[in-house]
Image 1 (cartoon, helix red, strand yellow):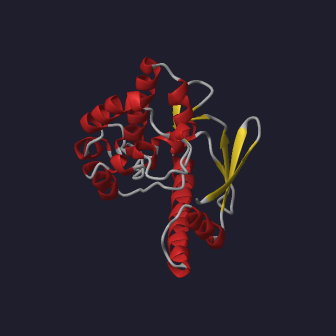
Image 2 (cartoon, rainbow, N blue to C red; image 1 turned 90 degrees about the vertical axis):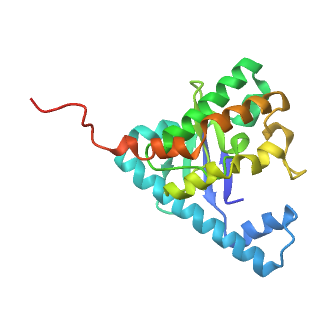
Image 3 (cartoon, rainbow, N blue to C red; image 1 turned 30 degrees about the vertical axis):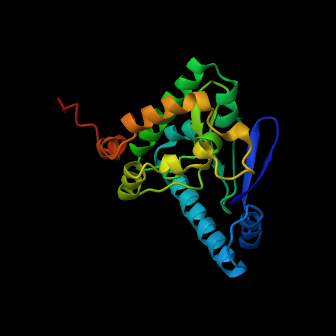
Length: 220
């Protein structure tokens, strides 16, 4: 709802919508709000997207090794960006064997925790649409417009199990294509692993660990 998305054979291009366009998309999804409130909702969401993209741009300048985990975004001054084209996770899961699907789920959780080591987190956890599998078979984050950089917000998302509220987990909208929803046969494994591994304690243990100086080596 935040971006106009186009693609070619190798890249995806995302440009932020105007408030009016974003509000119209919310309206088309049946949000029962008056126009004024839809416009405020759209404005708030777009403002969050701008903060998220700006935050990623700042982090990548300091930690460029993160770029492949984000499908190698190239961010322009107006906060539009391009990324490597990948197979969207919902599609990848539906095409996968059960064993491969479980592997993608494991790697997805690994990625969530890996990102917390750099101080970024995804409170929405729309696995089916906001993640994908790149040409090398790695799970990557493809939506960089919904991230937070605050540990308490990240821990709250884990503690409240916000992944259970994700559209691609329980599909409240009929308009959401089935290809983006986590397959029924994989949901028990996904639920089990998220409950066991994606916890506030895990976030506490990992938060910003990759940004701390290496003290394991002492000067000679």
